[in-house]
Amino acid sequence: MNWKNKTKIAKGLESHVWMGNNFVSKSKFFIFRTNCLMIHYAALKLYQTISKHIFKEKNYSKNIKEISKNRKKTQKKKIKIKRLKSLYILLVFRNIHSLF
Image (cartoon, rainbow, N blue to C red; front, side, top):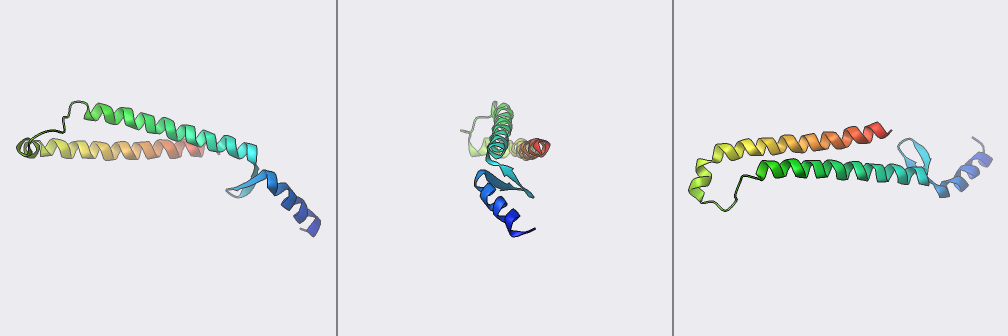
């Protein structure tokens, strides 16, 4: 690559953004970024609605005795929450990869 091509690239960089392995125009980059944010927001909303359904029947103002009785139930719920978090992360990454 000679110096003329390098200067052309340097001048073009004002309207371009480095993403991944190549330069992308700023307009394309902003579209990509908004898509990612929308996917992230949608996945977050989905996660929140699912977690609301899990916690719907639980009241947190319980005595220590009641909590110790229901310890097994709470442990099961914790596992469910972990699964949901992993599902949420999977959703986000799958959708972002589908954009490329």
